[in-house]
Amino acid sequence: MSKEELNSKLREEAARSRRYAQKNKRNDNSRRQQKIAAQTRKQLPPQSPARRKREEEARRLAEQEMREQRRRKRGGSNIVYYVMLSVLAVIIFAVLSVTVLFNTEKIIIEGESDYTEEQILAASGLNGDENLVRLNTAEIPAKMLDRLVKLDSVKIDKVFPSTIKITVERSVPMANFLYNDRSYLISHIGRVMAIDNEDPGCMTVIGYKPVDSIILGGFIKAADEEQDKLVREITDAIEKAGINDITTVDITDNLAIHLSYEDRVQINLGSILQIDEKMRIIRELLFNGHIAETEFVTLDVSDTSRAIQRPITTAAITAEPVTEEETEGDEPGDEAEQGGESTEEPDAAGDGSEL
Image (cartoon, rainbow, N blue to C red):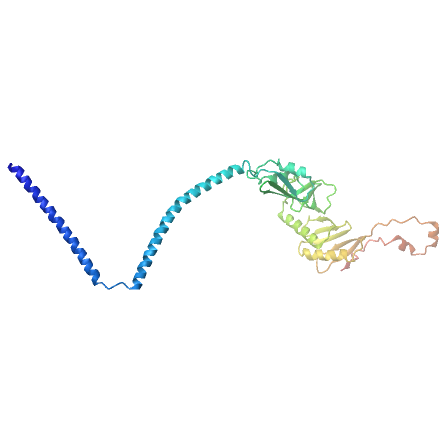
């Protein structure tokens, strides 16, 4: 055997001896630690029941938390599945809603108006085959009001699954405005119902000046905003007092407003101040025996502390022809009894009576 081989063999034996010694040393350390731990356990006092109970409770809570975490982990994957399924269902429902479902089967027309159902339906532009989901009802009322000038409002409702409801409201005349030798019938919301209507059936307003040209179906507005407010307050006060036969309202001078009742009682209203109290006085004079049904008078209620009544003239009287026998039998003074009331005009002082 050569010298190199001998040296190599000696080195291997030395390395094997070192490994064996290290292994034995580790085993000795392990046995020593186990022996120390056993001796330590023998020296420790036994566990108390309370401590064992706390340890068992802690272990139970730890196990429960682990189970909850595993459950949440499984539930998270299920939630993703449910969300995807819900999105798919919504998409399918949306497609069906605008194609197959919610198609119009019936159109209902409610409310009172001067138009037939056929006219209202034609003005709406609805054909009865619309899809309720795709139908845009926002522009329909304005289009209908442009065509049907005697309506004050139109409302379109979708009644799912297959019905459209049209609710209309008839225009109620408020006044007939005279301007530039033409008359304009105005509703309570200021909408022009008719132009040059021969029988408006409501009071006539004189002295109103609109800001723009007046068109049928449009809304009227005064150049002076105070006139709009004035007409509204007078109209409300008249309706509140229940005086239904006011024929004219003259607002040419807003400090000297004049009314006419049945074209035989002329009323000086003065300004709009205390309008409700003035209407109460007018109602008292008209309906409680102060003025006869055929009497032509003028009333001044501009001062609510004293209302003044003055006669204008008496109603016209148609007398039967007088025969010759009746003339011979008449006594002086009988002519005044047969001919009715005296038609003399009041003197310069006004011959008025303060009420």
